[in-house]
Image 1 (cartoon, helix red, strand yellow):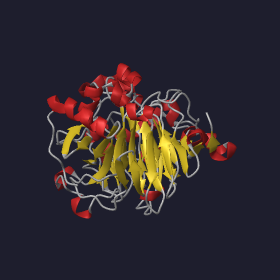
Image 2 (cartoon, rainbow, N blue to C red; image 1 turned 60 degrees about the vertical axis):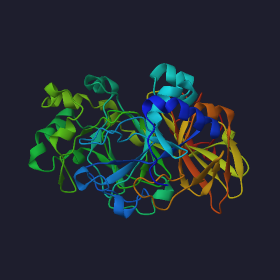
Image 3 (cartoon, helix red, strand yellow; image 1 turned 90 degrees about the horizontal axis):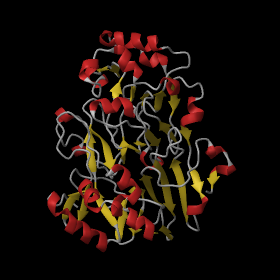
Image 4 (cartoon, rainbow, N blue to C red; image 1 turned 60 degrees about the horizontal axis):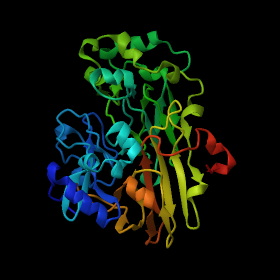
Length: 422
């Protein structure tokens, strides 16, 4: 269960072929832990209490676990592989990023490889004791100015990881209708005066386990203290707009981390990064809130597949996610139109030849049996999943861009008793 030896990048092809052949296209993944120096861990993502500061107190507590990630975490002082997922096979480890570069369309799908030449999305558990600063993730046109990509993201609050609400289970999102750019400018001008008052311009929404949100790039949000499953675009850009949170200073550098140096004091440019129309949308909840929807075409006797993040961004399907629940003793064959990253959040069983087990506690460096990358090859041929335990087997999986011909749209959870069929 402890960390395996590493395979060098130039030798990945051979071990990838063996792993794919042995497990019918499935790749076992090890946890990718990520700390944030400015946040306080919520302690619900199964990491052992002794290991919250495994990377050193100077790096901050570990409050995130990234899934099926080929995206590097943009942390100062980071380790070289921070944020990257490792595949595990026969006592050896190799990077999922290297596997994608080697296997190309076999791994991520021909369409995704042809367009992006990478796995362009990732997901994470994001878990904090309290709220984090009101911030946004740049849109593509602004992220491109620093050689990066924009980042829309999705939320889902798994009930299995939210028995404790921690300090503040509300999230501020967007800006109140009627807010002006001059109002936000005054907040930036008051940065060094203590609380700059940016939350006075926003609205908090109560978070509810088993629901979610779609957060477009350029939209301000201050996530609350609920453990969140976050499928998102493969980028780690952000800008913090709040100067003080729970009495902790937020450095100006975190506002302009992904802003061209010549614009670090240009308040008008900083504000222009915001998608203003979406931030002041008077129907913000109606346009961004989601609840699970049963996919009748993918559900059957003893198992239920639900959409949890869906609908896309500006009509484009960039990332989506589903939750599969299999009752004790049941089994099913999973067939998806593309690759996905899977994390087991409850129960035990098997996926093909790989055992599945939702762990109670994970030591830093251990390799539990809860995470799998379902390659495009495996998804196409179908994978048998069986619940061998005495409680429901529940897994979350997220998909890359344009994998599905059709998904539900935001608001569809109110229709047909929360059921949907393409």
